[in-house]
Length: 124
Image (cartoon, rainbow, N blue to C red; front, side, top):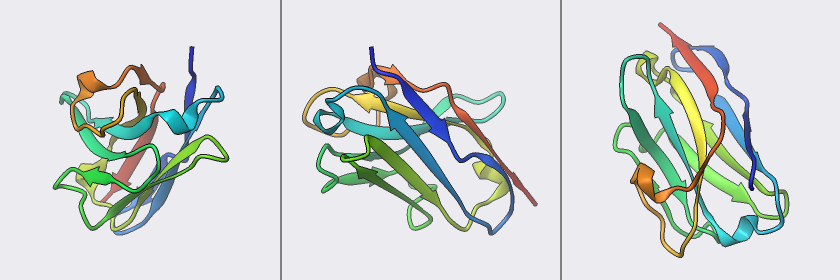
């Protein structure tokens, strides 16, 4: 079973930046689309970004377009989320996810593996 381990979360002031990393175990990382979801206290888990197996296709939630960038390094079995111009409303636990299949998706049920999450807190 794959393990997804997130890192890079923390406390940052509004307008600042963070880069999240997600390291995946196993030797088939390049066979899967990857993504990020987030969940704020008292709210549902929301889609943030996704990237195809090759990295050629990406998709973002409207709320983060132009501020967040998802990327991957298949040689390192790692997916990244660069977060710039952070806002207090970006505060949440961020989860790395893996999707079997050829296409990317914004739907949580399309992903079969989830990391334990990393906390991102943006102060105003």
